[in-house]
Image (cartoon, rainbow, N blue to C red; front, side):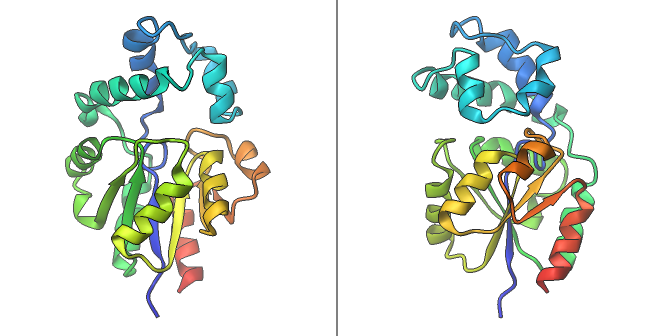
Length: 211
C-alpha cells in the first residue's frame, strides 16, 4: 500500500512570512490601491477573522485582490532570503523524508518564490513538486486539479487557515491544521480539522499513526 503524501501550504506553514507580508502591504501597496493599512495592534485580532471578513474590513474587493497579490508576490520575490522558516519545520520535513513520506507544496504564492526559498534553506530536494494556484478562493478546485495532474493517490493537507479546512472538507481530503500560522488554534478548532497541532513535531506523531 502506498504511503500517504503530505501536501503543505507554504506561507504561514513552512515560511514565517506573515509580518514581512504585512509590512510590504502597508508600505508599498495599501495606499496605491486605496486599501486600509494593517496596524500592529490589529494582527492578533486578524487571526480570528476569516479571509472574506479580513478583506472586507480593509477595503480589498475582488477587483483589487489579484492586483494586490501580484504586487505582493513580486515584492516578496526580492526578499525570500530574509523570510525565516517556521521554528522546527526543517527538522520535521527531514524526518518525514527519512520515514519514507513524499512531500509536496500547494500554494497561492509564486512557484519561483517558493523554489528560491526552499533552495535557500536547502530543502528543495525534499519536495516532489510545487503546485501554484493563483485563485486563493478556489483551493478545493486546486486540490482536485493537483491530484489529477500529479496523479496522486492518498494525501493529507497541512495548512494554517480556516479556508484550508473548508476546502479539504469539500473534496474529502484529511487536513492537519497548524496553530503557528495565520489563524489561531481557537479559530481553527471551530472548523473541526482532522488534526490540530501546535508544534511541527506533531507532524511526526501523525505520520507514525498513518504507518
